[in-house]
Length: 140
Image 1 (cartoon, rainbow, N blue to C red):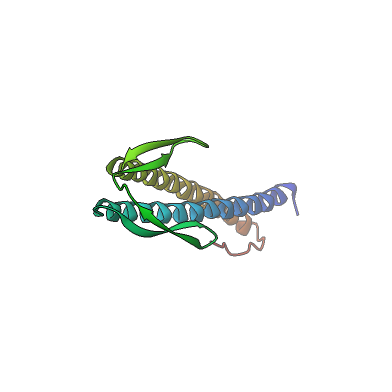
Image 2: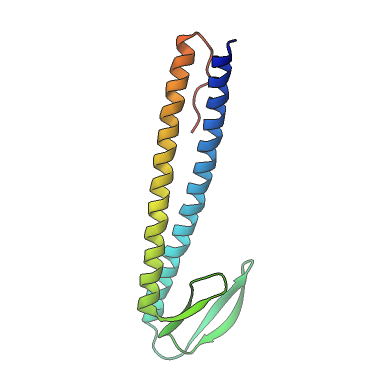
């Protein structure tokens, strides 16, 4: 096998790994978008609460504490690694919706990159097939 064909086979493998990494990132982004959308839904419901309200507060690992919500007009929003800002519920919804839009743009960019890589893979595969080299079918 020529050096050029070995290089093409290597590039096919590398591109496939890149695509797998990209789709792993896309999956993570989709989970984050779902989580942020749940936050927006919850904040919308919080806006409807008048007076005090009993609630369950998640503390992690699917464990909850009984709690009482006394003030539903403001929430704390994390804006940095250890920085939180008090915002009205409406401003918090706006903030979270902006995060969702940023994530969607990142997701679109990743999918576009994956398509470009897939196109390169198709070109390499065609080149190899033209030289009668057996190329495995592409996986998504």
